[in-house]
Image (cartoon, one colour):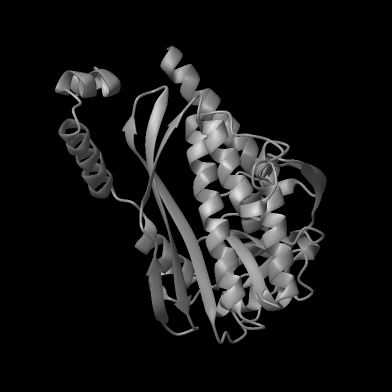
Length: 327
């Protein structure tokens, strides 16, 4: 009986979200991790998106994986990749060496502060709370460092694409803002595309609201929706036949956001990733750390530890988890 009640509660919640997405319009407050903004939800705000040619684009992504987990500390493996492409094909892929970092509850904050200071020559306004958050923040710093190196080498009017968002991360926001200013100063177009988005208001997932309304307002078309023009936050359907829409953050210091979105559209015609910029997909595929690679790093670290005098009991004691005996 309880199981049936729980199921009915879940379905009622989903039904309410669908109904709200159908009929709602007006102003909503959207809360991000770092701050908030006001969005205007109105079917009249959709506009068509026409593809524009791209001479050169570089897509950047990063990946990290917990190779070892000691609960109070972890060993994280991370790396970054940059994919140079034009609108037709990948021209070059650069993959960084993997970086291995031991992070504990006591040391993680200091490691993040040092890495932040090395990139920005400043102290961070806030520090990640957990070792998992620290690992993610360190990977983000690596991505931003790579983005700055790439922007320095790009020419005026080139396109630099990042995975994720340009707004919302309370640890990374000052770093991202500086990267945005740097790109604008060099007249390099910068944008970030989120594979997933937790943007929500009034209990509604905003991407779903925009997708539903956009497909009704502009059926069979590419379209864009300005969720927050001041910040350059858009939701876009980058191909007429695409099943998915994406949050796209355009550099708020760039004076041609529509031009950037149009270039993203022309990069999103690849049949294997229809509606998603193919250079970002190529960067993701090249950089992702697989389970087999993580297992390799775990085994390599274990062998090195035993070689340097750790006993097997030491190793088991550090990484003991009885779950492994129950599976």
